[in-house]
Image (tube, each protein chain N blue to C red):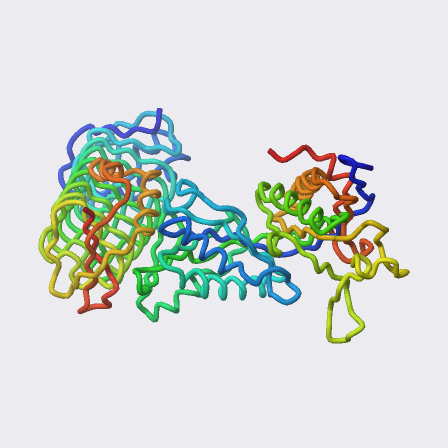
Length: 300
Length: 274
């Protein structure tokens, strides 16, 4: 099928079950909330080597946060409860607790509780105090600019990681334009992140490598500088490929985000076709068929 | 119409209404309720001697024309609603674990003592040791909320362990003494020795400037997030009118803060909101 003249392959993105948590970080103003959010979600593009995938889901107005201050909603995805617990403790401990004026809150309504303030409170060296407000427990930890307030736990939920779109274009500029449009559109869908830089990844990977130590290596079939080799998936005139990877709190969120991204990408000039990454359907339990997700109504 | 106990005659002395609870009466007929024995010294007069019983037993129980000589009203209640028109004696809502108790009058000593959940709302004043522990117990109130529109007597919140006590008017001497944790808010003036030997917990003052005991030191007040959470939480809850007015008086609460009692654990705080 074609959309705006762009060929949409009849294939699917293969995604995996993950564990996710949302943390709301507030600060005295939006700038400092953003500083904390960017630091806490830094170096979190892929679970392959970062421990988790994370990003700022969206910025929050003062009226949307528990303590009435500007904030950011952060989403963290990991492959196991244990890893997510470790990543949350390290990232909130090193990047939010350290950031002037911040406070951290649970961002999901329900789910298995993971320690947040419960683990970080020990930084208070015995001077920390717990408060129960409205049935929720918080820790107040003395720090040099006053106190760091942190909710005791944050719920964890089952999630979906690895939704993706592979954008094949006639030039690097065209591919980047399509990817940029896709990311801008999918970020308006609640409950999803695109964890790579700017939401876009150029180094799509295949499983395994000729080097035994590497679990993944370059996806040579989609490298334009290897076009023409027998295993290449690219045709003449397809000079650049970029991928958008999407993690979401549930299957519907990922599908909505993929659909939004796909529609937006196809408005870019120079985009030749859109495909998706999969492993034959044997590894991931979630399959997002490109033709099917386009039948979804646009997310408001 | 809820089950209603209307006073026939004033009691001859202090009579306990322990066990007269909505959940216990729900399965009884009106005649059976009238025959329930009360405790008065060594005697067991029937409830019907003092109250006319009407309405339908269920989750709600109302007392009309109450007298301060009736003690233990709603003591140990776990669910339902209890409305008291008039004054009630000692131990009102003591050991309450759920439900809502409303007193359209004043209450005596040790109201909400040992409370673990639910709400006690007193439209009048409260006597000594509101939410406090009995002398031989380590902790007083351990959960729930107490709202007093008027004044509270001495030793309000003594050894409070968890939960909230909100007093719209003045509080007597030793308010928040030996506080273990929890939150105690006072809209009016405080008596002497507020927060004496408090270990943890928060004593929030909306009225006059306190004179904290020597074991308290003034610190920076950097509790914006905590106070904002409290404010947001209280907006959804029953509050004394005097404190409800303060919710809208400013866009954010700021104040002076004292840490103490350093002679005890020293992690408690007195915050006077400006």
